[in-house]
Length: 338
Image (cartoon, rainbow, N blue to C red; front, top):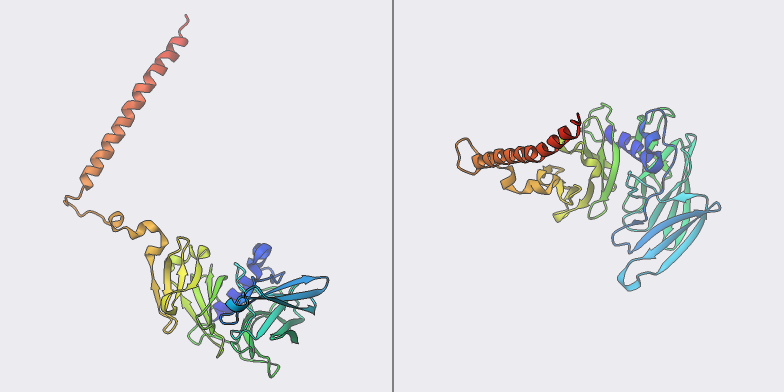
């Protein structure tokens, strides 16, 4: 679980222009970056936030078929944004039931206090402003909007010191116990959040991380019960994972998708077992004939291929000699005026 929190801190710092500064261990994230518009399944609406002159306008765009394109908006004081949780600006802040939207305050990290704006969406209105001592960023919201999951920054000079916490909105209380994967060791692990996808029912949040000392992994957060699992991915994904994305595949599995739009690994959402798919790394790998190596003495054309290569090389050398000799002869004639 320590790998998740470290990765979450670095990933939030690494978005946009803040990447070089945040990935160094010299200091915390200098900015909180805006996420993409956020939408929950079944909610029938997409939410955006725009700041101007010290106020934030939150806009709801209805996506249901019967009311497509209908818009509502509300304005609250202060500079707020849809929270981003990964370097691709994957967003969070909306509960699965679509009734609660939580916004992050825009600006430098303040180690003295953190404020979060909690809005009701039906109708669109500010419900409360959460004021916490210390530095926090939003990671997820419970399906019914009762809790917010946060990453807490513990050091001004070392972004590797952190804790993952849950805040009970109804009780107004920060859970003193951090959320950890009980199977994880206490060794420090590093990583950068690359992208996130929510499970089919929006209960589990899956975040892909790379750049860590122990390779790539997926952090799975149960937003209903506050549990976490860290899922190690195959080692062959360690370098390529920064070009990958996540998607919900067949039967609800979570696919790690390579740049050739093919799964390179899949996670079973019930058992968290990982199934690697090396064929997804490159389309040519899926052709058996290109990977088959002839056995010694087999008559499969291997010897003929080498013979053709040798003949081709000979022809190239002969052509080079043929075309090169006249030029050399002319150069000699031009230099022999005496």
